[in-house]
Image (tube, rainbow, N blue to C red; front, side, top):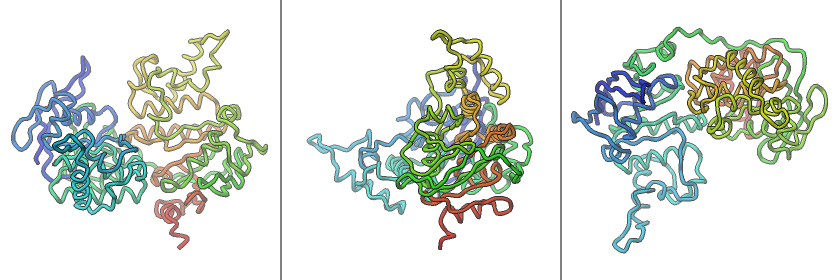
Length: 495
């Protein structure tokens, strides 16, 4: 299948989103569609996915202009859209998810389960994937759920698959499995349009690229002819400073000390210290227990054993409220599910953890709330039109900065950041790194939880690597690199 975007223009009211965008996706290409949040990537793919039409221009498939009025039109033309946030029905089986909304029935109106199972099995076998079609979705890992979504697309005889940030929730070995499958589909002539902010993955997987900026196509070409740094600069429209590896500094004052902390199968006998002004990293593979560990330290799961000390005094994290009183702050992973309140304003989201501060006689005082948020918004360079707009009107990077502002407003002594740049573009990621460094320089003990080795190396002075709920090792200086992280994270040092 050959897809041509021919002079696509799109606006919403007076807001122009796409300007005269033209490029071609050839059969079997793995095309990286790149750009910052707000560049127009999603709008363009939603046009291809049939969610809304362009104002002008057209989509051409195999030489014929097409009119895609709905997602079903798009599917009928062999186009499938796998969204970043998967929505499987976990209480249904794999084959039932694959046929969801297109169930086969026999002459009596009963579900033809035998036929659906056989077709599902055929698709999975063709991909060389060992998934039982009768397994429940709830029993599958994140990568296998992605593969079921791809299988569902192939069941519709999709010849073009749009994948939006497909590796966000995957561990390294799961990413390898997904990439192997994508290459196999490409060899079979299926087009892949791959949307990602992770340029190292894009360089590894994709054959071609298109860069959008502010709704304009600014570059396209063969991936082998472009360097990662050049892609970064094309995306943000300026030269990016090379991020230097974080160098260990001398930090004297111990803020947090943890001794032999354990909680069931989640984590066992974890001990470490974090000092004022330090950026301490925790990394590993999915399921390593790092998020569970710090949820306990933050009081979300207080049924742990072992000891926590703050400034030398023993402290038991009985609740998140108790942790907040002790000036411990936690920016959770998965911003959309666990951090933003979509029905509240930018300002309210940015001050949510400190609303009591602005209450007088049971009434919320707007002036001090406005002043505090405006101060952090300026410091963090948060871009918004009106502080009373819903937070969902902001880009992912600006939403994340609002959540950072929320917790910095609590004046923490310990700041825990769980995947702080998940789902943000490369420009916003660099801005967040600079914000984190400034926070640490103010004397806060910053702890960064991240599965991205490159992020850990760039940001953290010292890193603890977890493996199956235990600390596998500590890295700093020259030893803190992606290769050593992976050895510890996979348990290779134990072999």
